[in-house]
Length: 234
Ligand code: NAD
Image 1 (cartoon, protein in one colour):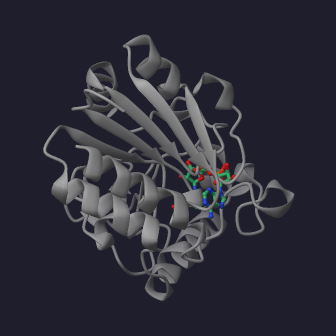
Image 2 (cartoon, helix red, strand yellow):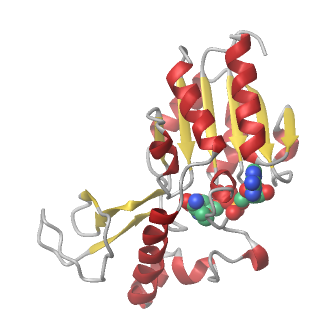
Image 3 (cartoon, rainbow, N blue to C red):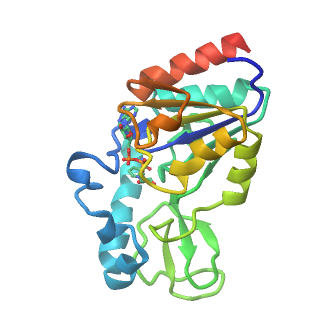
């Protein structure tokens, strides 16, 4: 790998699998036993807010029992030591990248540890359970919801991501199935702008053919190896 300055990394549920957080398309294509339509759509929130809030309450509470793994640690090391531009874009709603120490990152699908006011769009850090009807401290509306981007909603920070992809020399996708857009299309955007593209995944993703290189294996092994090689060559 030559002449690499600017790197964009996309991570998905697979990078947190070895920490003990279930992936989305685990056995049966369910997320912790639920179909996405039940817990990850605006319609579900409107029709059964108790179920949706409880689902994310459980996911938030489960964060207390997990720790970052070697893949999160390796990306945090890259964040500290890489002198060029770096942006880690995660689709994950857990907080394992930041707990490992990564700072040049963003959550494009929201965060478990955040609540969003559906009335005034104010966000607030949230670590406890979040019952439906919780009041927003800013506007008073009883409209706080999990700060999660549901299917059909616009992912966060797309302008920042698009700008980084247009400048990237290297795009790396880690542990994502490539089934959820727009993230699944980032590889094509990066290629269009001339970036090298690398997939690190347990199995080939839906978009594997678009990558110039694919390495298959566990993120906890592949990511530290890749980071070590990149920093040694730089
Ligand atoms: P996904 O569940 O659709 O796909 C997971 C991918 O990870 C698969 O391609 C699988 O081969 C790979 N994988 C599994 N174990 C791995 C390992 N040990 N090492 C490397 N790769 C491994 O996940 P997605 O593509 O991220 O899409 C799911 C959506 O669900 C996301 O938008 C996300 O917000 C949400 N989600 C988040 C979490 C989380 O925050 N940890 C967990 C589940 C779902």
